[in-house]
Image (tube, rainbow, N blue to C red; front, side, top):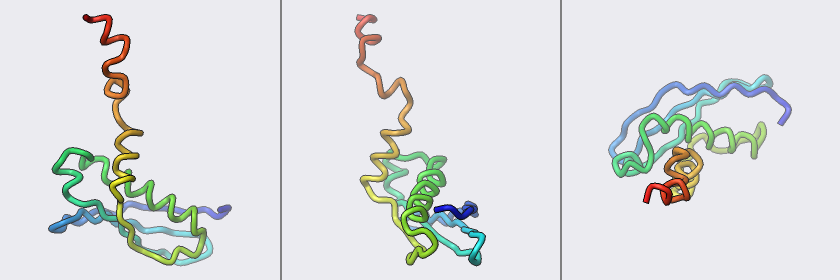
Length: 109
């Protein structure tokens, strides 16, 4: 994709089963389009994802979708899957949590 794309997070709406994150996407050769990405509320209440991480994981998902479909993205709504939640959590875990139980911990014993 060689075209400039501007993705702007414009807020979220808390719904009974999901949080819906809303974005505006502006491309040089086309009009502004609205997109939404949802995350099940259970991901937040079970502490698998923090509320602060919601916009970021949704933005990453939208950027991936935009990159794969270039200028012809057929859908305007996406959902964060369980696999994407796990991947995001693993990639963004604090370094101390990733290495917990390592040689450093063994020295303390």
